[in-house]
Image 1 (tube, helix red, strand yellow):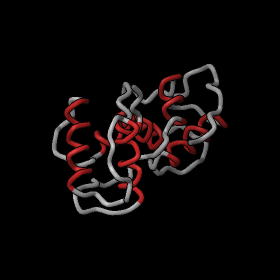
Image 2: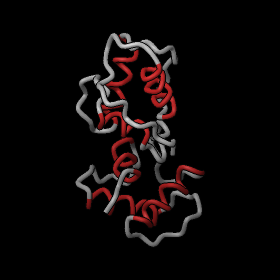
Image 3: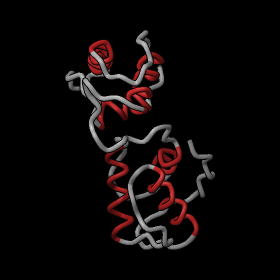
Image 4: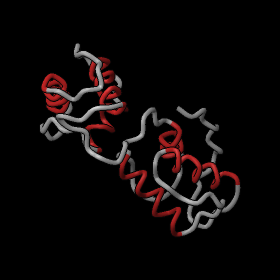
Length: 149
């Protein structure tokens, strides 16, 4: 998790230039939304900010106010860009298992997406009114990794 720069106290928007825009662009990259860090809030930055807002369930207005600024810095584990499902293995599965346990589960954290992990994913999805398919896509990932009880 990045150490957050304090919110600059003003909205960062299309047409702006400077260090605050560079900070926004840097954080977009850390959130796996690739962009050139040039300090210019042009059309590309506007589109990327809206994409980030959409992924984080924020108002997709392209304005970087306090909520978007905070979300840019509060990304414990960015979505890997692909679904994680039964049969998968690796670090993403380990992270999912650990977060499922944090959310009230008790499954073995072994990095293997087996039937027990699938059942726990489905239970989490049902509890949080998500599509219950046992697959960890972007929506399930975002809720799971930004979940606080």
